Image 1 (cartoon, rainbow, N blue to C red):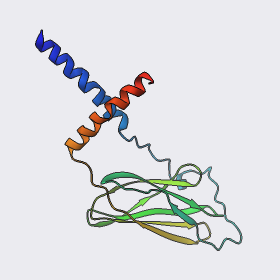
Image 2 (image 1 turned 60 degrees about the horizontal axis):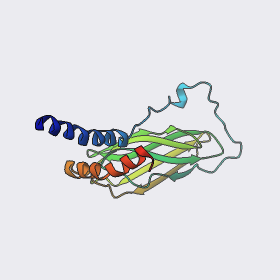
Image 3 (image 1 turned 30 degrees about the horizontal axis):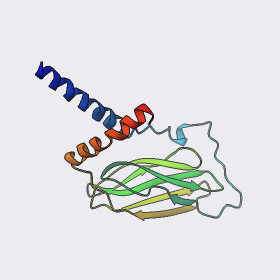
Image 4 (image 1 turned 90 degrees about the vertical axis):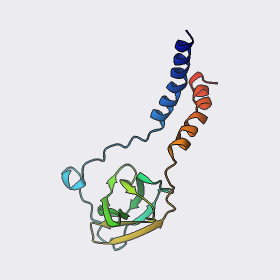
Length: 165
């Protein structure tokens, strides 16, 4: 009987931890197809557009490993070139940015220390190019014990949200 109670208690203790770990996992949606493969998207060329696109880097922090990198790119003409460059495993890596909503573009980047700089390049249909970069302090991934302790510290919040108190 004591063994059954101990196993039941262990299962009850582990279930919220598993639920919290699953709920806090970041789900990364698949990017939409490239504009070049989408014939319904019309290229807009503004007649007197001599200004390069404006790039606003929205991502404020990068963690060790995979991250969704976001930028806002605006221009009078259609954006034709959009890419992110960073160092991955000692090699310069270029990743395309995919359009989301409201001129926000996203890319999945896999960055590790000692890499710190991310460069964004954007070009419009008139050939105007812009480049922006940002330097980050790459936040190291926590060790497994820290992850477990953080998950256990979230149990009271999880229970509180579960019962609406």
